[in-house]
Image (cartoon, rainbow, N blue to C red; front, side, top):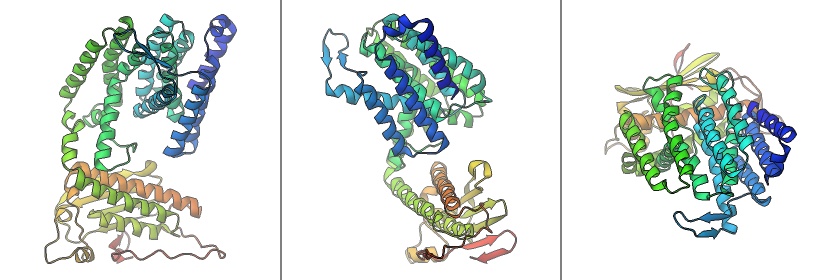
Length: 484
């Protein structure tokens, strides 16, 4: 909200004191209106989540609006030649892809307080220089750079204000727009490639994350904890040191972006080579680089992994749907224990405000991995999951899969891998969180084991189908071992 307000103030200031500068720049009203529309879309999502498809549709429609009013990538100059190509209808498609990509890239960068704001400050400084050279939006980009500098004072860790989707969408869309308007008066290749140098590290990080998710069978834009800043924090760095470290690397790429503009694109091959060398050096210096670039290992296990992940997604989706159908949290907990059992976990512990429920597999063997999830700061409960060595063993030839389920054992060899255990655990935690949200929405009751709704008289309650396996043995913290 603060960044959008600053943008409006800067635009009004330019209109009052530098109106002659404003009148000479075509498409200024389109930039202002479309930027505020993109902020409104992100702010709406902050207040009430819209879902990925609706957000993407909104971004595409706003980008279409920009194209309809004449702003877009219309020509392309082939590097190192004097040949200029008219893109015609392809220009609309490229413009939409560019704007949507920049919008979402900045949103993905916003994983640690102060990170996206600092990178956007560097980008606005670069675009101010490009605007100064080509006579386009220099005052507006400089004003936004000043607004970001003031914003970072309160957004830098420990943050007192937050960017949110509204601010990230707003800044990413503006960066895409300003690079397009600058390219219309200069060499499109240099003006649009220069910001990519600043975003080199986030682009590589996001691209590898999307590739990993695709190979594992996960949704491509699903949030995870495998990004660069997550790895740096897992190495023991504080949030401040993580942000400053990424700033330092990005500052080097910012200088490469300025060099691309100064050379008018003539040094791009050399600059790309330098950028690639810097990325390789960064990966080599960081102890997690093998894990970060572990695409080969994931590819080797992708078939079995994708099958298990798809199975987990189906089960957690079923759990989410049960959230809107169950009349009590007690019955929903049994569904959670059933899902965890089928996925190969040996221990599940759920803590709510009024009690604790535990399911544990008999004779589970030695502990392999464990994880604990505080859902929405504990408001939706605390979930603890464990996997033991017995869960990773295949059933014997004499024992069928049904018999293995009946005696409480399941087969999931992937849980022996710590990374894959983490993925499966996150899926279960997300499924439970979404299920409780649907349960609260349907029943309008607090999240308690003792809460139970009464089905409306005019709407008969449909009994849930019996699971394929008998319900697992559960433990109540106060009553000991019981079968629910």
